[in-house]
Each structure stands twice: as structure tokens, then as C-alpha cells.
Image: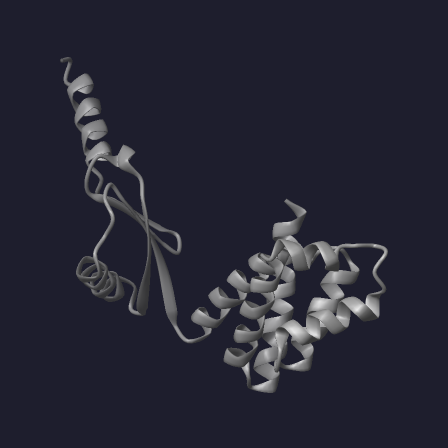
Length: 179
């Protein structure tokens, strides 16, 4: 649990710095590169090795990151020195959410019984966009337990158009009517 809140704080601070410098998109690219490094088991083994000198680890990071803003490298070194390099994926994801919010883009988490094709995603995106007054990006996943239809969460709004939910409502109304 502390890792999640740490990721949020790091992302917020890093995003504010990026806005001050006027380069939020390029910093996002750097975070993605850093996330890719953190998913490489061999590299992480070296970066987490306490016997390897810090300067060697920093050189390895610098080489792997390539040309990125120096503050991206500084963040990586800070996380590495605190043993928190593993939370970079969370930081990167939260940074992306902050960047989207900055540009007025909402994310809708849509759960459907079957995979959604691009046409349906586009249609849902347009419909949800009308509802919230912003551009909406669909993040879809599959859950066969909802039987059919979909569930969508946009910010604090939950839309449950699943067959499972409709059956539950029908069940409650039948029980309430004495059947």
C-alpha cells in the first residue's frame, strides 16, 4: 500500500516540474523508457545489487535511457537509492493520467463480456464524451461473468448495463413482488 501512495506523490511532483519546464510529453517518454528498464529482470538485478557501486548503476541507467531530460535520470537515481525503482510503472501510469487530465482527456474503464472492437470503442468514447463534456479514452477489459452488456466507470460515475446486473434487478423485483 505505501508504494501506491509513493507513486502518486512522485508522479504529482514530477508532473509539476514537467509543467514548469514546459515539457510534459517528453518527460512521459522518459518515464516510459525507465518503466521498460524496470521490467527487465537482468538489468534490475544489477541495479538492485548492493555490491555494485552507485556510480556504475547510474552509468548503466544513463546508457539504457539514452537521450532523456536529466531530471528523468535524477528521478531514476533517487528511486534507485531509496530502493523504490520498482514503483516506476505506477509513477508512469499516474503521470500519464495527470497529463491526460491536463489536456482534458478522461479515461473510461469499460468491462465487457467479450472483447470490444475498435468501432464499438469509438462509439462508446463518443457517447461518454457527450456525457462528461470531455474527450474520453476507453480502457477495455474482458470479464465473462457479466454475461453480456458492459460496465463502465468514468471518474466517479458508474454505468452498469450488464446482463448480470439486469438479472439481479429482476430477481430483486420478483422477490419484492412475492414470487
